[in-house]
Image 1 (spheres, rainbow, N blue to C red):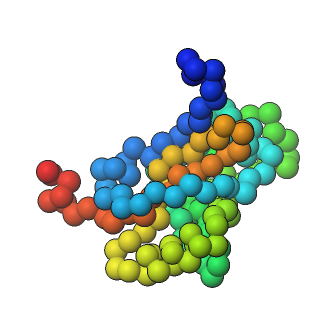
Image 2 (image 1 turned 30 degrees about the vertical axis):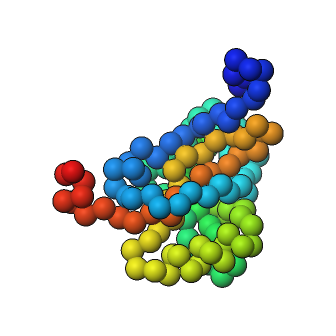
Image 3 (image 1 turned 135 degrees about the horizontal axis):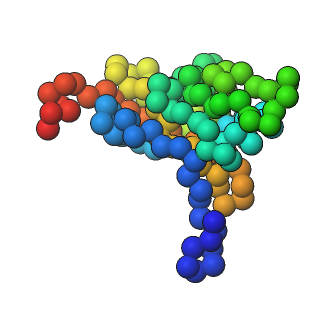
Length: 139
């Protein structure tokens, strides 16, 4: 994708529209995703669903859960599992900061969007979020 200035811009594959409605987003992080080949091809087709997905810090690593990437249409018997757990790639300092933040009461990591960067790498934008109550949503 090229904009009017001749520069490449990020190509958004999927967004989590419910995140802004259900959560207050306090911070945003950009992370890479460890994917299989057929998953990348499905992402390029736009066949991904972020609706019920979340991320969790385990030890010194961050993982993405319940992100549904549909099996590749031209894949064979070695196609991927649609809802497998995927490792996210963050800097060590960011992970340590997330460990401290997610241990606070009510804070969780929510994927906001999946996109391809200018260099063609699949990225996920994570939001450090706090859940809204029903009366918050009415406003």
